[in-house]
Image 1 (tube, one colour):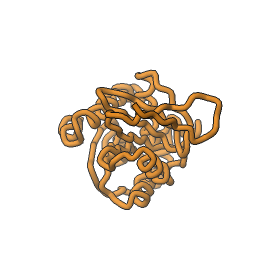
Image 2 (image 1 turned 90 degrees about the horizontal axis):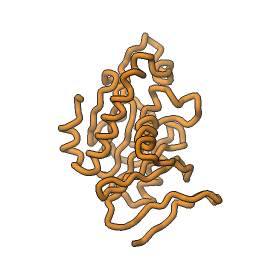
Image 3 (image 1 turned 135 degrees about the vertical axis):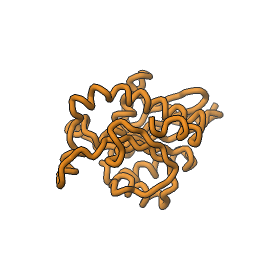
Image 4 (image 1 turned 30 degrees about the vertical axis):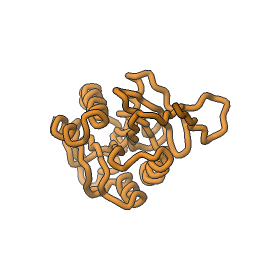
Length: 210
């Protein structure tokens, strides 16, 4: 079995080991902004989903080039979980780097993002589409030069008054939303596992609208 280390920054700490063997690799990218001030904001739901999965499976993210990375192994699959450190508007740079470095095919890429057009907690998996005005998706589309990539849209609703969209997106979850968030995060983790094991079409049929 051939192994190589993600040792992109010189450090004395152990590096994450990504195995190149018979395991099928997937790149799961949660979009968000780095910094404590953004941790519990609606715009950071991509980070939150991956943090929830990592916590459930006792995984530890390590800072690597252009993002924080950890690896989740499940049923012969290897999920490389990535939280870009480029800030939302430059997410594509990190996505392209890790896709290329790990030689992961486009169909094994999944981007997790917030969506104002869906009710809170709704989840929708799509294989292509426009950026919908989302700056993170816009940059990914620009760097990948395609709109044909899988995106997992997590609804945050549009419950804001005129002119307050930025405040709403960068605002923290309400108490009511926080009460329901844990169950929605569980469902999100199930979707990620299904994406890698059952495939995108079955996963769309199973989870879209739930």
